[in-house]
Structure formats: C-alpha cells, structure tokens
Length: 386
Image (cartoon, rainbow, N blue to C red; front, side, top):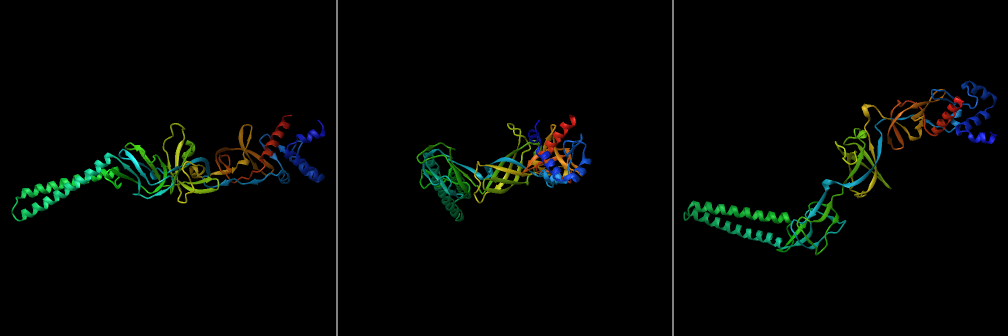
C-alpha cells in the first residue's frame, strides 16, 4: 500500500494523534510509549473498551467533555393538535322547522350570549305564539273572575266555594300561560312577528361555522351555527403507555409553532388506551385570549416529565450517544483516556436523551466528536485481532 493510501485510510482521530506526536519531538515520543503496546498509534485499546489518550491528544481531536444534566424529569417532544375547548363550543340549532328569513352573523364574527343569530318563519311558530297570546288572555280573565268572587265573598254575596273555584281556575290559567311561554323560549323566542321565532346565541364567543343561507328551509333540530369561546383552547396529544405514568395533571407543556411559543397545563390523562392507536390520549389547556392559536393547527408539544422513583433524571446530549457492537454506549473520561460504558436510553428531551441506567450523573463524558472515539475503538480492536 502506498503512503498516500495509508494516510487516507487513517481515521480523523488517528491522523490528529499522529500529527500531535510528530510535532512533539523525541521527548513526547518517550512519554507516550508507556501508555500502550500497539505500535501503530498513540492510543491504546484494551479488551475492556478502554481508549488511552492524553489531554493534548483529546484536544487535538476536537473532543469536548461535559457532565450529564441531572435534575427534573426532562421533557418529551410530541406532535399535537389545537382543538376547541369542548365546554366552550356550542351548536346552535333550530328547534322547529321553517324558512330562514334572517341571518345576523357571519363566520368569524363575535357574538354575545342572548343575541339573535337567525329568524325562522313557520306555521309552527305561529301556533306557539298564538298559544301564548291565548293563554295570556285566559289568565287575565281568570284573575278578573277571582278578584270579583273575592269581592262578593267579602260582601257575603257569594259562597266560599265560588272563591275556591275561581282561585283554582286562575292557578290553572297561570300554569298554562307559563307552559306556552316555555315552549316559545325552548324554540327560540322573539322574531318580531306572530309567525316568526328568533334563534339566540347560547354563549358568548366567535362564529366558527354557519350551515345555512337565507331563504333555506330547515328541519327541526337542524344546525344553523357553531359558536366557540376560543379564549381557552385544548391541546390534544398521545403518549406511549410507558411514558403516560410520568405525566400528571398540572404538568407544564411548552407549545411551539413557527414564530410562537406558549405554556399549557395538562388537564387530563386518560386512564385507558385508545382502541385504535393503542396510545394514551392526553389533553392540555392553553390560554388563547390573544387569539394566536387556531383550532386544527398542528404544533409541537414539549411535555414536562416527572422523575421516576423520586430520583433526578440523567440526560446527555444526543451527540454523546454511540452504538458499539449493537449496544448503546457513551464514552466516560478516565485518567488514561476514555472508558466505554453501556447505557439504557429513554425519551428524547429536546436536544438531549434521557439515560435510564448506566450513568450516575457525576461522570465526565465525551459529547462533541464522540464518533471519532467509536471509530478509533473499532480500528484498535481490528488491529488487536490481527
């Protein structure tokens, strides 16, 4: 093999180490010799996953060292969807069938509770309002008869039984009038004409859907509008069953979308898996008084996780994680260089990865350029086998 090909075959770390060794003179060579028995490089690779390097060699290879992050439970990044608050969304429907003769609100407009949204004209409305007027007249007549009988009884002209009968008739008339008013109120009320009923807003909010046009004939219970109070919206997301136990109502959620961020709070963690996805549905509540979040929008939710077993959670940068011989490992700094340590990893926590086991959190580990250690370890093992 030519010299050029040999140089090209060297890993970045080996090349950096050779250059450092060549530049240090005879004295540096004498100091590096006891560190290992391999003649090809300045790093010694033992069977136990050790890599022997000096501080100068580590710096030359651009390897950065840091301690793991310890504390809290970390976060879990998930896709989520903005939904309307179920308790703040209301369908406005027609209680009776008829023709739509007036629509007072369009999509996106704000309404207050009790405002008239639509007017429906129908024969049923005329019957309902006619019954109200008839029952009112009967009540007025019954009250008049009761007053006359009470006066005659006081003058000892009429017997007491006539007063009792008049009082009963007045009570029945009042009940009939109240029932007639209740039927009109249930259907809508108002409308401005004997054959018209007005449909009012059941809550204050914003019109998010309108299902009819002027002149359209609608059936009873047909949807006319949909109103939502969007000052508070819901965040819908799904968790793996293994993660759901670390999320509780009240946990913080950072909601992120292009150009926007806001804090939400977990309000519900389902005790059952979704039958289709086999995931755990979770709902968070998000303040939307500024109107910056839209129903149906896709966002990223960073859910704050609770630490397991009362211990602080250890996390490391994702660049510190490598795979060696099918095992997930990190490179822990030792006096002689580095030691390969197998770890069990969990959720992604932003740019970090949660380490469930293998690290205590007090170690120093290779973060940036840890892949060069993996390459050097593989090269050293191959040379040892030869």
